[in-house]
Amino acid sequence: MSDVPGIDPQMLDKLRRGVPLILSRTGRFRFDGADVTHPRVQSALRGGLDVTPQGEPIVHLGAQWCYLSVEDCPLRATTVDARGDTLQLRLDDGRTLPLLAETLWEEPEQGLRATVPAASSGRPLAVRFTNAASMQLSEWIHFDENDAPVLEIGPVRHTIGSTSP
Image (cartoon, rainbow, N blue to C red):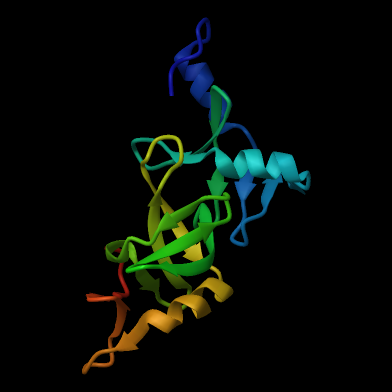
């Protein structure tokens, strides 16, 4: 997130914050109120999702970046697959990454969430499970003696909490 030569840092921050880009709860980008419909532009935006060191959502396009408003989670898990003793998440940004069980939790009345590293910085990005991915993950979810949901992957058991880890 380097400075742009020749531009006052305060003005640059104002410009970056003034971009009317929104990522909806369903994963659709809107620019100035209109849906972004071009598949390659959508892909470029999704692939550039990140957060600042302070946790503010941003999107990179090449060497440039701007802030954006995110109505829910920046990413969605679209499928869950088993590979040996690990579960892999297919994300809507095109990546397939292992599910880190310790980041999995159920947001009350909203559904399952987890965290994955951002493609560019490696900082944690929130992931919302789609209905299909939640159904696929349910194969590995059981309930303990207290009726708490537990994710069981091979010998590993992880209680799924209802608060962010």
